[in-house]
Image (cartoon, rainbow, N blue to C red; front, side):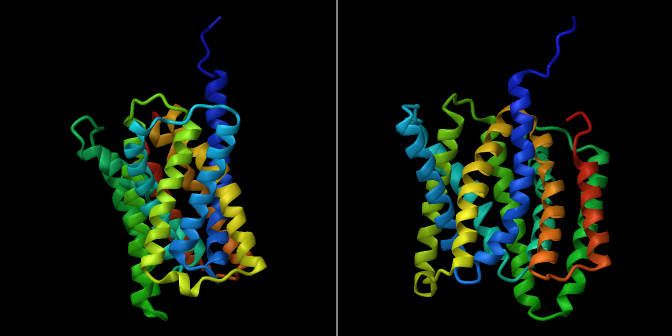
Length: 298
């Protein structure tokens, strides 16, 4: 009988990855809805601090181990990178960029992961295939955003595009750092502390930016925030961290293939966001670039 690598832990990792694909594809819509009355940094901050506190409370009540204080500095750094930059910048970008288009721009995360890995002394070599993939993906992004510059607030639109790429850079650095950590703490507890610390930073930024004075809630925006907390954060982020621990980083990053499709469909159907054939072609080019960049052995 052959030794099969498809063990229970691997099955759970793949199920976690599928959950990430489905849940995070819907969060772009909820972020856009939440921004109707909740300022960006407070929206992101409330989401992550609440989710982190909920998970910590549940784990503590169950008697599970919480990472010791000696691990908190590293978890704070991860929270700042993955959530402060990786999510906070996405929420900020959606103020001026449609939710579906934001999801496509954030789909460039694998480009950043591969590029970051290539400059590391112990990273993978940047092959010709990956270089071609980077160029193809960049061409798709140019096609995606260039015509938009002539419509409406082009300056605000480009600031949103820049913010989306800042989010990708933060997420790539944080994911690479998380992958290379050797700590054996409870994965879910560690994720909760990352959420909490990252969320605290976002709330602080929101308060310093004067967002508190414009904060308001409606049943619609309150419901969107609740969904972001429960589905997008408690379930989605915990699943992402688990998958990242047990699957290759290039494989995990492919969740970005699915997210834009879900986000574009929901944004078009529910929020009536415009989506042209040009955008569809550009998005397909970006995803094709991702396919080339991704390691075929992953």
